[in-house]
Length: 293
Image 1 (cartoon, rainbow, N blue to C red):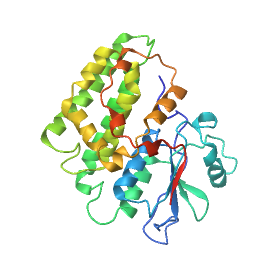
Image 2: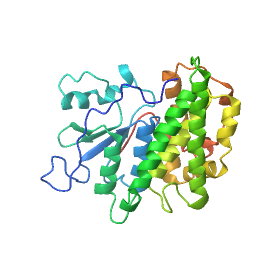
Image 3: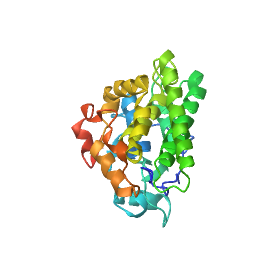
Image 4: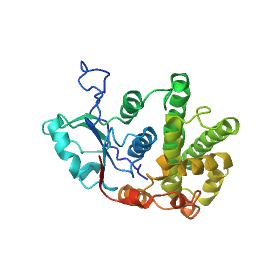
């Protein structure tokens, strides 16, 4: 089973937005543009955060097709930006991209930096989505999502693995991570405390991927054990009902991207849907290309 994001999608550009004109890239309304494919987990995190911050009039975005249309998991529409930013750029032109409209070049393709710069420089006053007193908890949830849920789910769903014990260990890791989030939600409203933060965006996208992608490669017994976290999946539904989350659901795009990249076998768990995501999806989100601003 392959991941939703191709292995070649390694961040190549790590520019940062600064606070004033002495920075190479300083914060200015309408200077930058986001290029996102909503079927990509990293892009979806950025799109949801963009919606939570209400940045339609400040930081325009372009939505790309769900399935990359160029070799290596790249997008043809992004090739001019990549080549303008790095002469004869050899790799795939992958999303996400934060571009500088003034220079026609790429600022960053690194999701964590893009998210933090959006929050820090365009998020307005107040504690925002990445408050300092929750930084450690947010980072911890991030590691849990990446290593103990997403990576573990991929290992647990591998077909033809030489050692079944490895799949069992991966499933145990996955279930342990879900138990940890379930426990957190038993004593607080959100996964990193009592207010919505960037950790919730990542956790929600991770749960969405677990149900719409990784579940297809797990057996029915494993999926039933994953389902047995009532607080966690109620939390996923609650966030999906939030306009900044549900409007970005492109279920058809996620399915098409998965089938385009995946070489694994479908298992019995594919028939056991956990959340009715379609009940929260906005049909407009499935448009292949849309520009805002």
